[in-house]
Length: 276
Ligand code: ATP
Ligand code: MG
Image (tube, rainbow, N blue to C red; front, side, top):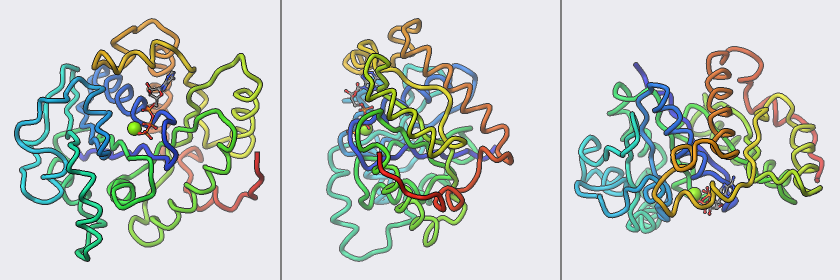
């Protein structure tokens, strides 16, 4: 077994990266996969969203990246079947300035995760909302990217900015980085803006945008305060059903990786830029 490493990234904040990571992780665990969620964000939202805040004993991602903790020991079991967590801690915020002192940092996460490639089917990296060093490290460690896109104004401009940075990472650090797809999130079908943005993203990126859309839902927003992903907090609500449906779509696309669906970002990038 060699883990498939997926990074959830978007430099824009609050678009549903963490929500998607914890729900995808738990849905994959429910389907029998072994999953490691890497909380690559000093905010630690994936750590608290999985109910693991305060349970860090043998180091966190910060120590693992600095080489002062053993990866296996830093990874926590969660209450969710098949799901482990490499937790974040506030120290992680200082790592970018330590790294910028000069030592090579780009492949640090990739090297750390290489140790557990045989333990997990999937490694899911929750990137912070920036294009800083931690984000680049996350993209360098991954084989493919899922980019959550909030259905709001300026979404398309944001996507072109991400694709530019993805291109740079591909060119210099990770030539095999592929795009798993764009996931439309926080969709409110009652508003014209949500409907228009979703239609526009699909128009520009028809093959790359997942069919499933994640609706805006109060239950999704409530779940993290209970330390639960919505798929266990309220499995029958619209948000939970959407995450289960999307997980299946994601797996189906994975199984057809050689198909045009798994096309590379280079091809996408040739499309003309039109603003929303
Ligand atoms: P950041 O960039 O700060 O890391 P993020 O991209 O990880 O943010 P989330 O933390 O997943 O975004 O979501 C932002 C907020 O929106 C959270 O409070 C979350 O509970 C809420 N949220 C996410 N998805 C939904 C949804 N489908 N319906 C309602 N609320 C949602
Ligand atoms: Mg987040």
